[in-house]
Image 1 (cartoon, rainbow, N blue to C red):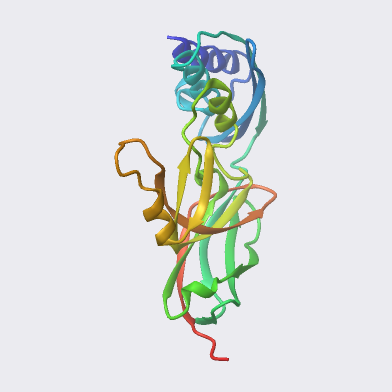
Image 2: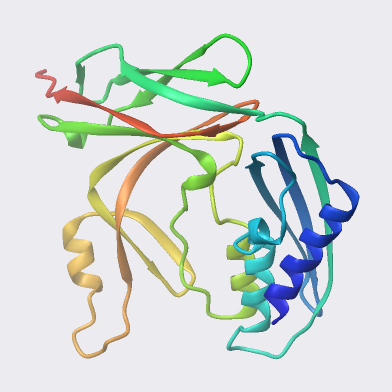
Length: 252
């Protein structure tokens, strides 16, 4: 019941101290202290329409999920000694909406750069445009590439499965890219693997074949590789979009 109690306490405290009936953007920075393992810092945010967030908004938050993961870890008995949270509220829907993206070039040379224009719409004010330079790898020559623009907080990096509590706590702080950012990403032909706390993001096919165990069910876990560019922004962004470009081989 610890996760439910954590969400209820945070939600009830906020309701008792910051009760509003307007749209708000909230940011919750929490410090979770674990006996014998120090303190981790986690960030949650959201937009509450017509009032402040309540316990249901925090039920799936990172801080509540971390408390549950620590108390249910399979490696050792431990205790969450303290949870300290600081809530910041802006009395507006203080986010930028991604209205769309476009590529300045339909075709790009392999090894060159694609230029992607984002159209961002604030809740109040004029549209903002930003151009992102995206490096296109040589290995994509002759292919069509689907480039996706996604809010940073929605992009989960590849993490190795934890093998002890320290690794689990380290993973808890790396659940997404920079929250106030967008990530421009696209698939690349190579694959990656995670194994024994390590991540190899891009491996050739022959390496994957060599790593597959012949006489065991325990082995590296493969995942699809992405090329990613993270663009820090001043505000949180909501929405996602994508655009396709063709990559031509460069004859030398």
